[in-house]
Image (cartoon, rainbow, N blue to C red):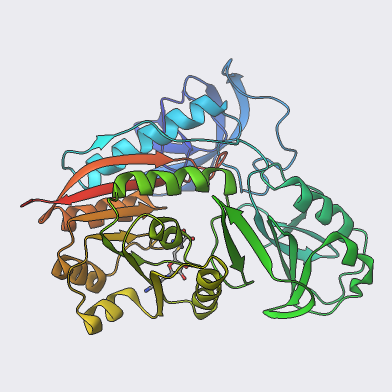
Length: 394
Ligand SMILES: C[S@@+](CC[C@H](N)C(=O)[O-])C[C@H]1O[C@@H](n2cnc3c(N)ncnc32)[C@H](O)[C@@H]1O
């Protein structure tokens, strides 16, 4: 079977007897012998048994766990091909689910490997990931996506008794490594390698973890969301700032604000920022961060974005920035944002399908001016986008 294109999850697409077949770890132009592992009415899923013809661009010597752990779907593609795939994926999804006119700029990218500052690991004597499509654990000694210090800690953890632990989280930010356990261990053996140890959200050793970006400091608690790719986060935030085009007089809403990072960046160039976030731990971090960074013109509110907007009836908001989870904006959030009537909306999204769905609704009142894809997750099929919308009657 010949692979003729990719689906949006980075799988190759070919046809057998006119039926579409999705096959992982294949490249356009390759000819493969496949075993059908799932056969549905309208499509099949195949696994490669043999490459009759391999692509010349296929990368060799990649991660030993590639196609086993399921974390990296497109690591076999050279990075420039990954970027082309993502650029094209955004274009197709926006055309299909939004359908309106929008200028799509070139994808912003940064480091290809060792960019992740957070990992969730399973424990089965040693630490590891779930195998692809299963709950079996594959033990790992390192992961090519993770920060080198996290990899060093993983090797160390594999040499000590992890007791009853089932799930472990490691974070690496400017101030060091945070280790989050779900059960006690003799941590004297790793104390020197980490800056803090938590059991769930209770700190049992060390100091607050913080990240430094553009002269600002952000404390991060175990349960708070923080962007996982430090290198491209700066580029993403700078693009958001660029799209805001602030003159200094604006009032800005930062919805789904997490630990207040975007709002803090923006607050230095506008009159006032209000950040809204549902996670209590993240909002507590945001309040601490405001104080540490001595930002006087920003306030944070904990709650559901849609409900807070409905209850507060904000007026004179110039710009609304949104950065929701994969599910996108709730119907209530969209309705309330439209009621607030800002001049501009800056929408950051980690799922182009929900982004396109929301753009369609917002485009009744707003013109979708421009979208920039951002590769926050190299070697996986995921892609972030940031989009600027302007009110139609201005
Ligand atoms: C993709 S993160 C963005 C965080 C932040 N803007 C940043 O760049 O770090 C999405 C955030 O939305 C928050 N969230 C999820 N549902 C929410 C809701 N209904 N209302 C407000 N915040 C919500 C999550 O807790 C998370 O912190």
